[in-house]
Image 1 (cartoon, helix red, strand yellow):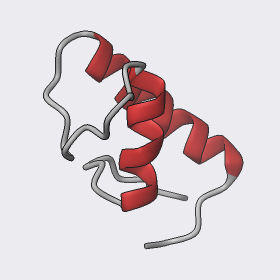
Image 2 (tube, one colour):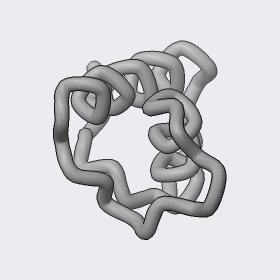
Image 3 (cartoon, one colour):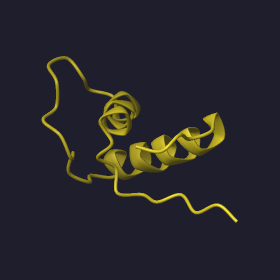
Image 4 (spheres, helix red, strand yellow):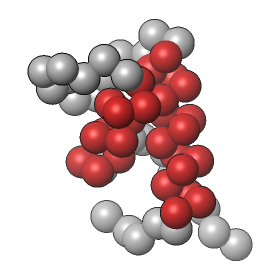
Amino acid sequence: MQEYTKFEKARVVGARALQLAHGAPPLIKVPEGITEPLDLAEIEFEKGVIPITIIRD
């Protein structure tokens, strides 16, 4: 997994959390006790399963 700046991470996690909040299916098995889309998006980001690509110029 490549290194991301804090701004890139915030953008990717925020976009994924919005998708989850609007009903997108989780890409991982949801851990016990996780109910917030932002928490789930952060876990997905750490596992590297979010299919969003960062392109730098």
